[in-house]
Amino acid sequence: MDIQTLLKTHKPSLAPYEAVYKNLHQNPGLSLQEHFAAETAASHLSSLGYEVRTAIGGTGLIGILSNGPGQTVLLRADTDALPVEELTGLEYASKKREVDVEDGVEKSVMHACGHDMHVSVMMAVAETLVKSREEWAGMVVVLFQPNEERAGGAKAMIADGLYDVQKHACPVPDVVLGQHVMPLPAGTVGTRVGAFASAADSFRVTIYGRGGHASQPHRTIDPVLMAAHIVVRLQSIVSREVDPREAAVVTVGSVVAGMTENIIPGEATIKINVRTVTPETRTRVLSAIKRIVKAECEASGATKEPLWISTSSFPFTINDQETTETVAAAFSKHFGDKHVPESAPLGGSEDFSILATEAPNKSGGKGVPYSYWCFGGSDPEKYEEARKKGRLEDVPINHSAYFAPVIQPTMSTGVDAMVIAALSFLK
Image (cartoon, rainbow, N blue to C red; front, side, top):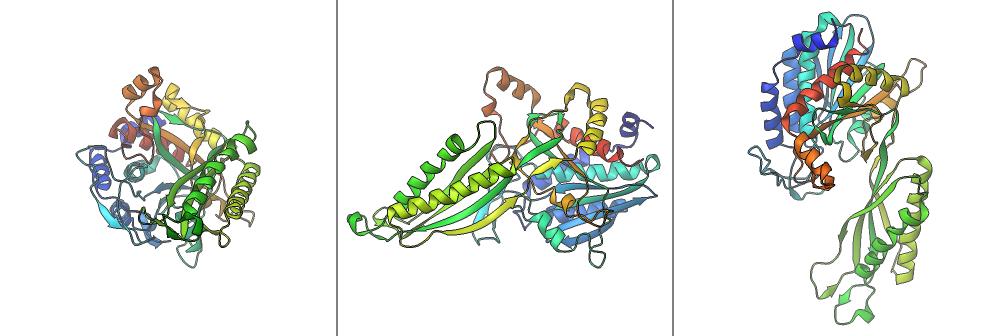
């Protein structure tokens, strides 16, 4: 049976999954707190006859569907939400607040990166594969991963024995597949061989001055001014130290110091996020950041060395050529000109690849092929209107308080893409 006929015959009505999506959107969970999404996915997989194993690296879980001899394909969806106050105005908008287990602070919570779409899409994919099992052979592992946003989920699942036969005994995959909804026209998909997502490194840096009365700055060492110099100087790294043919981003997303205006505080905390696309640039940029922070602290007479804490680290996502070309060929056949085979690399970062690079392989080492692609979630008409006006910045992006994929055709496209990709290896 060809893939178009298979989807027409076995793809379920997506109306129930649209309801699931809205429910997930209204009930998001921060990283390490994805309990509702995990329970929703686990219950669904069990109802379909998958062998379900839960509590892997936190709220992570897998569903196993064995269907005779053949390759093993692992399909991954992430489940966590973000500390963002939703401003979409949707009738199913999140109003949730919860205490973040990472720092004990109560925060607004929103699925501002589309992981609720990933979960609902994967649930529909799981049903499609069950209904079409007479048309394929092999084994499917559906994996729901927590804590992607803080780069800890894939590592935690591996560390907790995801592939360990004595623990969770996930069947070792021959290939690992994943996808992400992005601010592109809904109905489109994009693949790319090679580098597809940047590495990301995040740090919390505390710098130390000497506090005192705001009227007597000469008797203090002002960490706010020190932080300001650091923030400005960091912006010169990309423009003056990175090869113009390379890509890098250095962002200071948080500067915290003091509690009131008439006291110069004793310390300040800066949170820095770095994105790079090659190992060489990554090394150069991280070295430059540490050099600048150290130098500015010395120039300001800091009372002690800055304190560096690494808060997250995402690997590069480099799609396997043969695997991606196989997926791309299937996408082109099904989606036609809605498939972009040379999609621009993602600006963001992912820990997805760890599920493949840390998997045992047949040679006795580690690492199996993987491919990761994107599918559009923006209203096509609004996207085109913004493009014609040269105002694509008006299209809400991931992590924005206004990011909300149009449910259709986003969901249908995501289901088709994952099913088609999986079946490219299940023959």
